[in-house]
Length: 276
Image 1: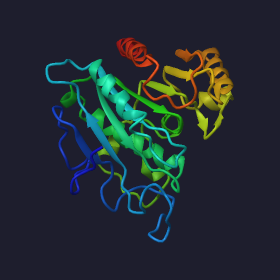
Image 2: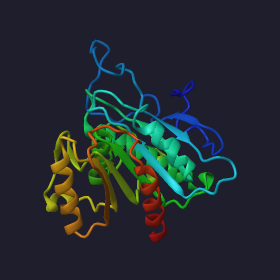
Image 3: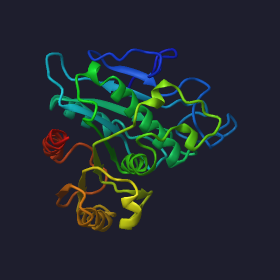
């Protein structure tokens, strides 16, 4: 995958709807964080000076976009499996008419909360440039695989709409992009759930705090977290949240875009956006 060139960011660079574009999510020196990641801390997937970024993969020329999807790969917060998770899925969704955006969010030693702000920043950028990308500003979905789904859930639970970086870091200086609500109208949980790493939250009172959007689950029966996926799906459904799912018989954890589920997810998402 490409990396940002020079200091191109979502704030200082115009959106390009015709080409793949890679942009840093934050301005240099103004990244909200509560974790101190220093150069003497080694052994992590990213270097200490890593800056999260978004890769925009637009629809083909001449295609009328149906909306946007923001994707986060899994990797247990130790790495990002873009080549198995988000990249092939984005390529497929692009062919179904969706503008796609892959977020390289912050990993360990950063927290789930800091990664959620990265997701929110990407959503704000897309919403601000909805007209450029040819979409309705409300037709934005987030989705994630395994830890990436947990990251999407953290965003929706605590860091969407008008929440900005000052919620975690009082030294963060909000900019004009923070004036855009980080609103997402759907969530895709691909072998994932709302909660923490390896632990789905089944408390309807806690889940209701997030005003969660329609949610689509995909998981296999041989996944070690299968029972948790099943339980949380039922909890959300009983809460009145619009839910759907694909359960792949005999499939394990971590199948990426395989299994034939992407087409059905794309059709579901198109219907959700029509309801907005």
